[in-house]
Amino acid sequence: MSRSLTPAAARRIAIAAQGLARPRPVHVPTTRDLQRVVDTVGLVQIDSVNVLTRSQYLPFFSRLGPYDSDLLDRMRDRAPRRLVEYWAHEASLMPPSTWPLMEHPRMRRVVDGSWGGMQRVARDHPDVVAAVRQEVAAGRPRTTRELEAALGHERQGEREHWGWNWSQVKHALEYLFWAGEISSAGRTAQFERRYASLERVVPKGESGAWLDPRTRPGEPEAYLELVRISARAMGVATEADLADYFRLRRDRVRPAIAELERIGELEPVDVRGWAQPAWLHAEARRPRAVHARAVLSPFDSMVWCRPRVERLFDFHYRIEIYTPAEQRVHGYYVLPFLLGEALVGRVDLKADRSAGTLLARQVTWEPGRGGADDRRELAQELAQMAGWLGLGEVVGA
Image (spheres, rainbow, N blue to C red):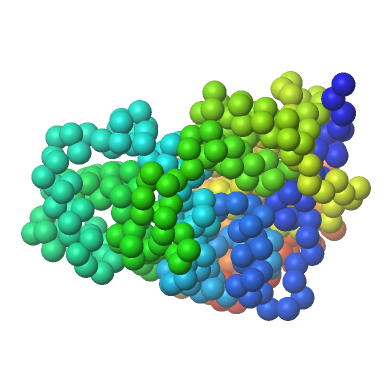
C-alpha cells in the first residue's frame, strides 16, 4: 500500500526540493552558491524577454537574494564552463555533464526529423550545412550575423511580427546546434548566441561523451539519469511532471520510473486530491513548515509546469506577455509571489531603467491574502530586487 501525503506535505516537499525553503546566505553569494542552486534545480530556463531582467538571472535571486549576475555569465561563458546551453525544458542552461544525456531524447530526433522539423535544411541545403559546420570549426565563437558575414550571406526577407526571417545560415546553425554537432560559448549582451565548435566548449574531463557520440550514455541510461535529476529537483511528482521537466516522451519515462522505484530511489505515494499516482524521491526533505519568500520568474522551475502549480498551490497561473493588452487580467510580465508555503499573489514588474525605478504596475492577491503583513513582505522583497537591479526605488507596490 502506497504512503499517503497531504496536499500541504506535498507542497512543502516540492518547495524544499527546489531550494526555496533554504535560508538565503548571509554572506555575499559566490560562484559556489550559484553552483548549489544549479545542483538543486538541475537546469535553468533562459528567455529573451528583458522587461525586468533576463529570465535566467531570476531563479538565483529568488534563492540567494542579491548577487553578482556576472558570476552566472562567467559560469556559462568562460572556461572551465560550469554551465552550457541546450534545449531541455525549453532553451536552458545545464551542467556540462547533462549535455551528453540529450543524445537520444533530443539530438538524434533532430537529425531524423521526429523533433522540431529542423532537419529540412540538412535535407534541402546540405552544402549550406557543410559550409556552416566548417566555418564554425575554423574560427572563434561567433554570432549568426558574424558567421553570415564570414560566409558572404545576406539576410533575406522583411522584418515581421516575430523578428527577422531566418536565413539559411541561421537554419543551418540551429540544426547543427540542436543536433549536438556544435555548441554555444555563451551569449552577447544583446542575447545573441555565440556558436562554437564542441572542442572549444567541452570542459576538461568531459571530452569523451562530448566529442564521440558512441561514448554517450545509451537510451535507457540517459532517460534514467534525466528522470533521476527531475525527481530530485521536484521532490514529489507525477509521471507527467517527471516527463515535463526535460520535455521527455512519457513512454520512455515510465521504464525509468519503474527502475528508480525498483532500486529504492523513488517511492510511490498517494497525494490526497491528486488524480494521478505520484512518486517521492528517497532523499526529499519533508519539512513540517516552510518559511519561504520569493518572487518567481514565469520560467522558474518551481512554476513552469502550470498544471503542477495548480495542483500544488491551487493557483491558476498563465503568462500573459503574448495576450493582447486589452485581454490581460494580471498584467504583462507577471511573477508569482511565494510566501511561507503558499503562492499568495502575483505582481506585474518592469524595470524602468531610464527613471531608475522598479515599477510594480499591478499587484493581485489571492482570496483572503493581501493584508498588511503580506504587503510588507512583498515590499521588502521588491526593495531587495530593486537594489540588486541597480534601481533606486519601487513604484506602485
